[in-house]
Image 1 (cartoon, rainbow over the protein chains, first blue to last red):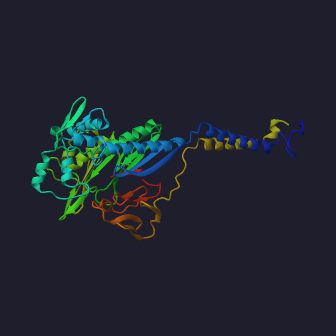
Image 2 (image 1 turned 90 degrees about the vertical axis):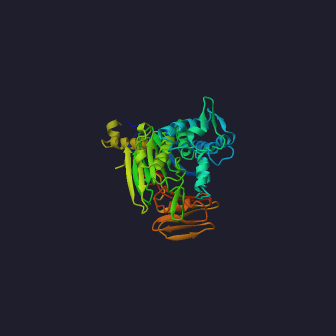
Length: 342
Length: 122
C-alpha cells in the first residue's frame, strides 16, 4: 500500500531504503553528540612542564577534559607552597622558622617530613642526614663553591648530626642552636608524593609527577609507565624501568658539582667526613613513595654500593648504584628487583 | 511496502557499521598528540619562545650563555652562571628532555611525544 505523499517533501518516498539509511546515520550522530555533550566524559591526557622548586616539574595526567586545567592549577600551587615551606633558601616558610627559631609544631607539613626523615636516617645509618645544612653552606653549594680548609670542616661537623641536633617530641620538634636543616635530598620526592596524591584525589585516572628527576606514577587502568634512568657519565640512558605504579628517584654526582685543581667535588656530602663522597656516580631507587626513594637514593649515592646493598630492603623494591673511575668507566650494581623494560 | 522490500540483506551490515562508528566516536577518549617527535627544540627565554629545527646546526650567542644545536642535539655549551649545571647537563635529543639555566632564565626542551620513556629520572 502506498502512503500518502501529502506530508512529505517533494521526491521523498517515506519508506525508501536510502532515506532510511540516511536517517539512521543522522540519528546515530545526534545520539553520539548528545551523549558527549550531556555526560562530558571525555578523558584527555595532558602533559605540562614548568619551572618550580629551582628545577622543572613535568606532570602527565589523564582526567576529564573540563577538570584538567583546575588540576594543573592546584598542582602548581601546591608545589609552590611546598617550595616555600620546605625550601632551604625560602625566607618565609616553616624550615626558615625552624632554622632560625629552633622549634616548630609536629603537626605541620615540615613536622611530617621530619618524622619521615627520622625513619630514613635510621635505616640508612645516617648516610641520609638532613642536618648537614651548615656543612653544605661551608662548601658553598649550590652557587658559591669553595673547598674549605680542614679545620673549618671539622668545626662545622660539630653542628651536624641528626640524632644530636634534632629532638622530636609528641607536639613539637626542636633543633640545637647552630644546626641548619636542609631537606634537599627528600623535599622534591615529598613534593612529588603530595602532588601525585592530590591529582589522584581530584579524579585523575592516570598520573605521573616528576620534579627534578624524582618520579611518582600510577593509574586506575593498569597503564605501564616507562622511566628512563640517566647514565651518570654520558648522554645515553642507563636503562628504562617499566612500572605500573610507584616511585623512581635518582641522585648523582653530576647534578651539582664543581671541579677545582682537577678534582670533582659533588654536593653528595658524607656526614662522617664532612667531604663530598666519591663512592658512586649515581644511585637510583624504586620504592612505593617518592620521598623514600629520593632519600634512600641520596644515601646510597653517598654510601656506595658495598654499604648501600646492606640497607633494609623493607623500604624499597630495587636499587641501582653506578660507580665510575677517573676515566669515566662505569660499573653497575643492582639490588632487589629492577623491572627493566624489555 | 513490506520490510523485505525496504531493506536488502547487506543494509543491516551498513546500519550496524554506522551505529558502531558513532558509538566508538562518542566514547573516544584519547586525542592523538600531534607534536613533531624529536625534530624540534623549544628555546624559552624570559621574553621569547622560539622553536628551532634539530636538523640545522646552529650556534646562538645570547647575553649570558651560548646554545648550540649540533648533530640533532641541543645544549647549553657556555654560561656565566656559577654552578654551570646547565653546561653539565650536556646535549639533549629525546622528546621531553630539558636543559635549563635557571639563573639566566633559559630553557631548552625537545618537542615531541613519541619516545621510549615517559620521563627520565636523573
